[in-house]
Image (cartoon, rainbow, N blue to C red; front, side, top):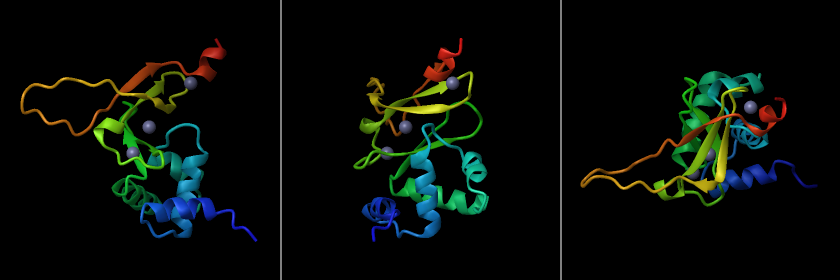
Length: 142
Ligand SMILES: [Zn+2]
Ligand SMILES: [Zn+2]
Ligand SMILES: [Zn+2]
């Protein structure tokens, strides 16, 4: 009999994270979500998980480049699962879109962030590239 969690276990193993029931649950919840999620969003979606557990799990996922985060200006960081081979280097960063109507933030995975020329000896570690506007669902309602 095929285990329906096989897919998630494999993703975790590939990132050298030991699959536990909680890690699988959090990964699945994130992958099922069309928009990025905050720690609070996960807490609301997962009634059985404690905030500290969610926080530790997300930190672990971040360390293994399984998820990335963005500061969308809403006051809480938003997280999403990375592409399979992502190593979260600056070159791999994509743009994000924050909808000012529904307050959701989306990964624009096929839109790489523009390359910015920096002054001499400035070292780039991260780019927080967030576009703001109205998402497809909200613009349809107008
Ligand atoms: Zn990544
Ligand atoms: Zn929207
Ligand atoms: Zn993203």
